[in-house]
Length: 135
Image (cartoon, rainbow, N blue to C red; front, side, top):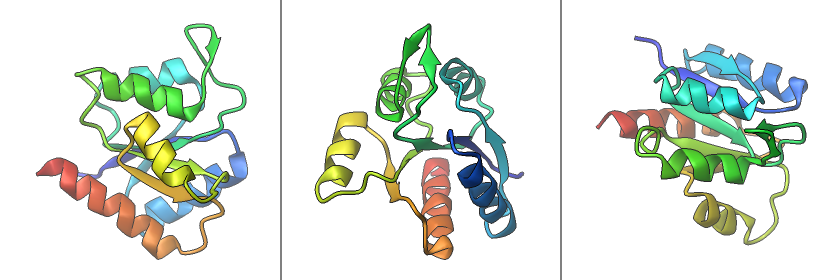
């Protein structure tokens, strides 16, 4: 059965590139939204096996309030019905210490900095987390 990756990203260029690599190299299905309410609905409904979460969502609202990827990840990880879904943070704000702070703050399972240059490593990380979540 094909696994589905939910891409939470507000840059359509990134959406196209990530989708292409996830489907071609990973053999994965890809769903996309930057609507935080929709993200929660999709994950709660079990329609995503893994979430790639942009940290700086510029237009996302959750229940009428502005929300970024860190906050959205916290919401998903704090809910027992969605806590087991692996989430990888994706961010262009990759400074020394950001990775550790973001992972610790959000409870995410992984971290990828943009721009992604090694798509094989990117897909390997996604596949490893998908495999781990099945165990």
